[in-house]
Image (cartoon, rainbow, N blue to C red; front, side, top):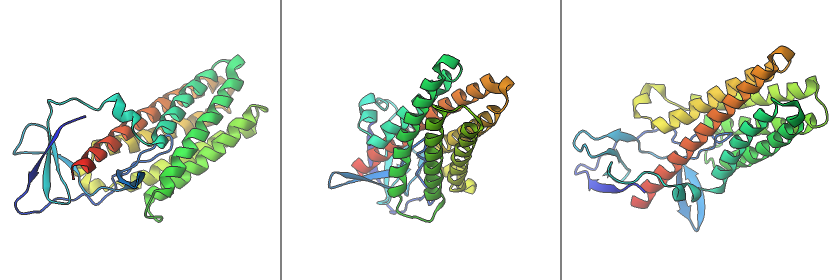
Length: 271
């Protein structure tokens, strides 16, 4: 766990980042700030942002609502595996889902393993569906881009789940169409999260959030294009590779989701 020091700002002023500090949970789940209330975890967007201190070169710092200047030492240990394990269940189901997408996409390359690929995809979709559902119900504001992002992810997971089950019995155009529709909803969800970024304030946004959002966006594009390629037998292998690469990018986004959650909880323990 990284060590942090707290320094009080005399004038009590603090800079606030009004945009979201939550990232998508789809195939990439992320929540923003998490507070513990009666043993339960609830998510809220944080009102601080990370920035480099000009007065203290020891590490990264940020200002919280109380006007306290938090300074993080570079000479301390980084995020540990134990901290990752202590994250909420929806984070673990999300990364398990994205990893299973990698295996399922690889199985598609080998015809004898095609059915196993469909089964693996169905399990992955169910895991990601749970993660996105938790993300949606924990959103305090029901009418913003992030909530609609989760909503589109949920629809995409359901369509992909049904399509994967159907593909276990039939390998026809309907199975391909279900993959295309599911991928399009994933892509729409990622676009809604991108809309929540205030690009005019991009310098003040946590880079981890940007990585998560764009990982989902790129992964959604690869899944959509790969699904269309399944219509053409000569592009079948290429489609599988698009799915594999897209799944790896989704998994990368989930890793940064963990970092966002852990960093926000470090802050809560201090303030």
